[in-house]
Length: 249
Length: 81
Image (tube, rainbow over all chains, first blue to last red; front, top):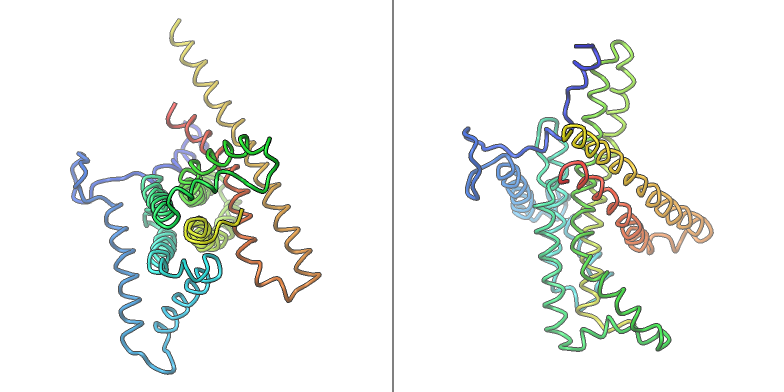
C-alpha cells in the first residue's frame, strides 16, 4: 500500500451516514438515529433562544433578547416586503422555516456534528410542505382562477399554450429545485472540506496549504449556511405571493 | 466476459458523472452575471441598492437551481445508477 492509498481512504460521504444512536444496525422508522438527535438539538436550541430571549422583556435588551428580536424583525420585514400585507399571516410558518434551517445548518458546521439539512429526505419534506401549502392556499384564495397563473395573458395568443406548458413544468419542478438547492449546497460544502482533509493527510509538511484552505472554506460555509436558509425562506415568500396576492401577470 | 462489461459500465458511470458537473459552470456564469450587474447598478445608485437585495438573492437562487440539477445528475450517476 502506497502513501497516497493510506491518506486518501477518507471517504467524503462517510459523514452523511445515518446510524442508530443506541447500537445495533437495524433501521426502522422509529429508530432514534444521529439524524433524530441533531434535529432535536436544533429544535431545542431554537426553543431555548426564543424562550430565554422573550422572558425578560427588558427595554434595553441583553444579548439573547437582541438576537431573538433581530431574528423576528428580520423575517417579519422580509415577509411583509415580499408577500405584502395579505401574506403576513404566514409569518409564523416562515419564521419556523428560517430558524429551523439556519440552526440546523450552523449546528452541522460544528466539527464532528451531523447536518440534518444535508439529507435530501429532510429538505424534500420541507419543500413538499411549501409546495402543498402554496397550492392549497392558492386554490382556497382564488378558486379555479389560480390556474390563471399558467395562462400568461400579457403574451401574444399564439405563444400562450407553449408558455403555459413551460409554466406548468416549472411549477412542478419547484419542490425539486427547492429541496436540492438546500441539501446539495450543504452536502457539497461538507464533502469539499472532507476532501481537503484527505489531502492534508498525505502532503506531509506541505499540508499547511490544505489546512489553510479548510479554514477559508469553513468561513465560506458559514456564509452559505445563512444564505441558503435565507434563500429557502424568501423563495417560499415568492411562491406564496402568487397564491395570496393579486395576479401580477 | 461479463467482468469486462461491468468495468466498462463503471467507467461510463464515472465519465458521465464528471461530464455532468460541467453544467455547474453555467450556473457560475449565471450567478456571476447577476451579482456583477447588481454591483454595477448599486454603484450607480447606492441608495436604491438595499431595497433590491431580496431580488438579488432570488435571481441568484433561480440561476443556481439549474446548475444544481446537473449536480443532481452527477450524484445520481455516482450513487444511484
